[in-house]
Length: 211
Ligand code: MLT
Image (tube, helix red, strand yellow):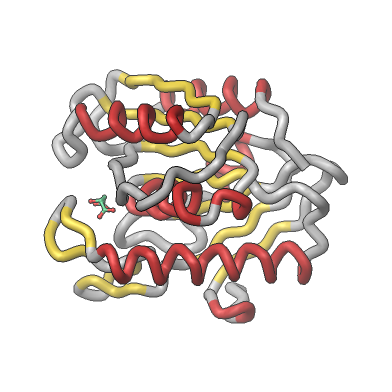
């Protein structure tokens, strides 16, 4: 059963590797807390998995923040929701005893956008981020300090939703803040493919998350 506690309906799977980084799984528009569980298991076998459901409904479809149109975000709501999610993560780390390191976010589409917003607004909330098909969610007034925080951006070469310039601009913004950004363009559209998974698995094996 999904747990409605901590302010978000969510799933939690206990990790089998004490000390290993946990994953924060963030689904896309219309998804839910179950969507990315098997992806998380493949990316980091045995890692603790924390998977909330976005609280904003768009025509009945869960999202992590409001948008005014496709690719046009409600920035006030985005700031509010990024803080709310960062608070949820902080509470969940205590409740589930997730150790000293913040989780690595794995976000797809809308989930990647809220993860990028968390990095830009609340840099201590995540230990790293794997962003599938992200856009630039917002440009913060002041750049955060993301020294060495590992980020993988996986764009789709034929993505009809995310313009090619967006992942590139996000990479530049995060690099300016000091993040260790790797960029990959998959031979894919907006949906995820085997190539995305393989690139994600390789990156996940190579990162070390700061405490
Ligand atoms: C968003 O709204 O975050 C992006 O447009 C991606 C999506 O369609 O969810």
